[in-house]
Amino acid sequence: MKRLAIIPARGGSKRILKKNIKQFCGRPMISYPIEAIQNSGLFDAIHVSTDSDEIAELVISLGLEVDFLRDPSLADDHTPIMPVLKWTLEQYKSKKIFFDEIMMVMPCTPFIKSSDLINAYKLFSESNKENPVIGISSYPVPVEWAFNLNESDSSLTPVNPGMFKIRSQDLKKKYFDAGAFVLYSSDHISRANDSNQDENYIGLILEKIKAIDIDDQEDWDFAESIMQCILAKE
Image (tube, rainbow, N blue to C red; front, top):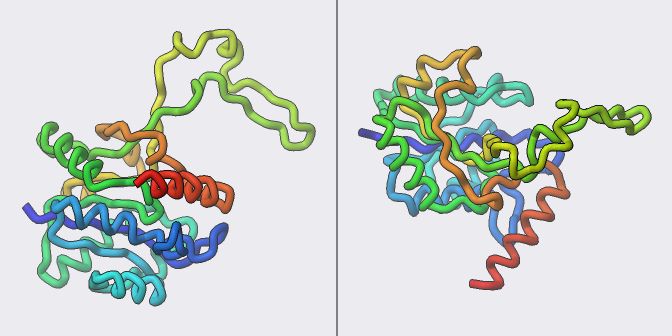
């Protein structure tokens, strides 16, 4: 079995400029998942999928090769991830390089460790590698308590009327994609279509700290303050 780790890192981040390579606690953000992947010992190759020469140069300075740049048509704000994974595998196949298992690891995941990737692979193997394994985390409060906000007057409308009176301990936990990684078989990627992107997954529960969505500057500052606390304890 040959395994490939793919880090999707396009260059056009809008809310945080150059987010994937910006310095995070003294290191480029993308260096954290690269280190976790390398330390896991699971992968035959690591490919950073990027359309950006600047990101490619940074990745090369970290000791990786960039076998090819991503097609710009697959690097806009609206491109789903699955076409990127399919296209990447097709490029390798055209070079007579084939992979059986693919793990997509997101670039802004500074808290992910090699042990998380290893645990995901163990779960994948236990399920006979038939279903992809995705990192998940639990919502901090019951989703049944959600409101819709009317932005014109700030009034709230419950998504599920009447649920607010039910105690949190009486409601089952719900989980979300932590935005960290997904482990697939190459066959799953080749068969995937727009209608089954959220079906037949197996979830590996991650610590909440590993599910911080670094989407804007407030998220970035929050995540960096947590990392600084962790580094201070080491």
